[in-house]
Amino acid sequence: MKDLRDKVVVVTGAASGIGRATANAFAEEHAKLVLCDVNEAGLREVEREVASRVDHLEWRVVDVASRAGVKALADDVHTRFPAVDVLVNNAGVGQSGGLLDMSLDDWEWVLSINLWGVIHGCHFFVPKMVERGAGGHVVNVSSVFGFFAPPGTIGYCTSKFGVFGFSESLRGELHPHHIGVSTICPGMINTNIVKTGRFNGATSAMQGNAVRQFEQRGHSPDVVARAIVSAVKKNRAVVPAAPEAWAFYYAKRFMPGQFATIARFVSSRAGR
Image 1 (cartoon, rainbow, N blue to C red):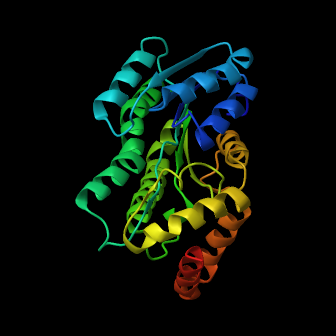
Image 2 (cartoon, rainbow, N blue to C red):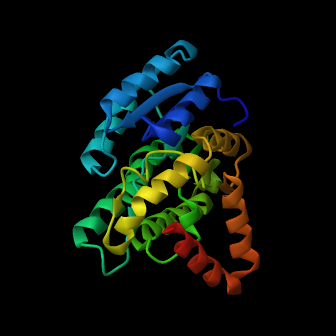
């Protein structure tokens, strides 16, 4: 999909952070945008940012954890377009804590958004892409913690490993239909995901420090947005975005025996 002009692009979690930057990046390509988020005020701000650069823009307040909400969005979009061309499942939340720290409500919260949100998006948008028979692309935002699992992040890692595996399987399944699937692993990006996330148990004392680290050292969400657009154009399978994401990705591949030690070190540094 070399030319994204007039392609119909759905972006979830579009009101801030990576989603907002992604909406702007596709606006630069003159795509037609369908944006959703739970944050109406943020969506209105994004609308003001991109409206002059696109011929078609619509947005909806949608909770991706809601099966009915995502279905209603897809049904509405499909009244105007036979299928979308690009689906970006980006919406996500942060979760920190070990198994002994997390309640079942915590598990349901993080999995319903981070994993089920991706499943809902694919379930309600991909069949129409297949039915149309003109190809397309799915982008699922996982994480460095989708292949790298330090202690104290069990809920978040479970959700993001799930997205990683789901995407890998889906890529093979959709290949005969000429629909690409890319798994994006951002790295340390300066968004609100740490500030608004849930820190449980002993990790709760680390939240303030983690927020400062992301603000001071985190890369711009634009880095991820550019990686997403490039992944669609080049049909890339797995795309670490920030430099440290690439470093961890290759370390996991080529030094699997030493990676547990790296994970423990990174986890210990996070609390300082």
